[in-house]
Image (tube, rainbow over the protein chains, first blue to last red):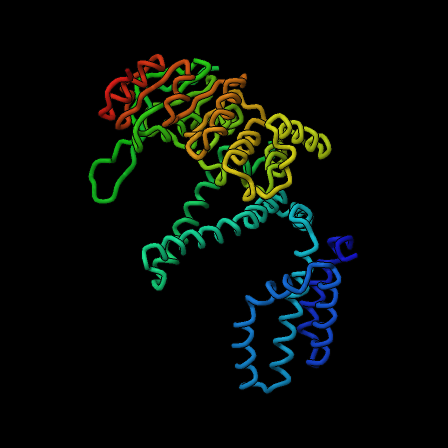
Amino acid sequence: MVHRAPLWAKFLLVLLCGAGSWLVSDWAVSAAALALLSAVFLASGAGIRRLATAVRPVLPILALVGAFQWWQLGGPTAARIVLNVLVCVVAASIVTATTPVRELLDGAASLARPLERFGADPERFALTIAIMVRSIPFIAGAFADVRDSARARGLERNPRALVLPVFITTVAFARQTGEALAARGLGDADAG
Amino acid sequence: MSIVLDRPAVRIDVDGRAEPKTLLELPVLTLAEHRIGIIGANGSGKSTLLRLLNGLVLPTAGRVTVGGLDTARDVRAVRRRVGFVFTDPLSQLVMPTPREDVELSLRRPVRNGGERRARAEAVLDRFGLLGLADQSVYELSGGERQLAALAAVLAVEPEILVLDEPSTLLDLRNRELLRTILASLGQQVVLSTHDLEIAADMDRVLVIDAGTVVFDGAAPAAVDRYRALCGMPARP
């Protein structure tokens, strides 16, 4: 059912969660919203493991933020802030877990369409997002390669040996992608 | 359609050197043969030469024209006529799947969505990729990726196809497949390669060394010259 919901409805859900996090003042409401959204996520069939992968990266930051707010503003406020962020993360994951990339891109292009009269090009907008989405696995792969080669040379504890090569590989990849786009005549300003 | 290189040179400024460094300096060359190969050592200027042909690199002196169009002034028109295939297909495939990538190529020439989908499927089918059309490009094998890149470039029917070391990342089976496909194309083909068997398929081969043409002629003699350059005996 979640899969078949139109994209705009899913976007609206994320928007509401974002706006709601400013308005809700009771942490119990946030907790209820989080429980509800988690239930929706699981009902979409994406599974608990995907939910965990979506939430895990923000947990360390949330722990820090939560501890700081607890110290500054007390328990209930800290709980509300942390829960609200989690609500937004889960809502966004529902969209990405139940929508194919191509549909997301078409959605992004149509969102940018009203801006056309101000000189924005929706096609380029969608192309930019497509390249962004497409580059994530590349950068993840570059990280894995660099980690392996650092390990092979016994440098796995040296952060420079990990970060610098990934950075350089990524810049090189960006240049190659730009060259490839230019060679194919894509992303040119005129529509001719 | 023929490519005319009118004494083009490519020079770049290097930090700490008063004189700019010359990457490539060519005589007048007219490339009109159906199959043209470029061989030479690493760093000899092969890739720079190929990039001159579609305006990815502009000559700092002299000029390059494709069918009468200057690569500096009419770069868009030149790129519509000259398809370019890079060594690493992953840097060339911009979209997540082959189908989307081919459709991206066709966005400008084919405005109608349904027609575009049909054209894309026809192109993918021609390269035997229809069954893999919706797989992530990361899940494809090296050969399948190279085919997908080729399909995306040929979808817009360029008149000239330029390939930069197209077989470097391919296994033997895929290399043979590439050779068969290249032989079947109606387009004029200009490619650089380290694969001397592919070079032998060409009608004319240029040997590049240190940024200049040191041999220009038939494939067997060119390969002999290249072997001599690398300090190897001529073939038995």
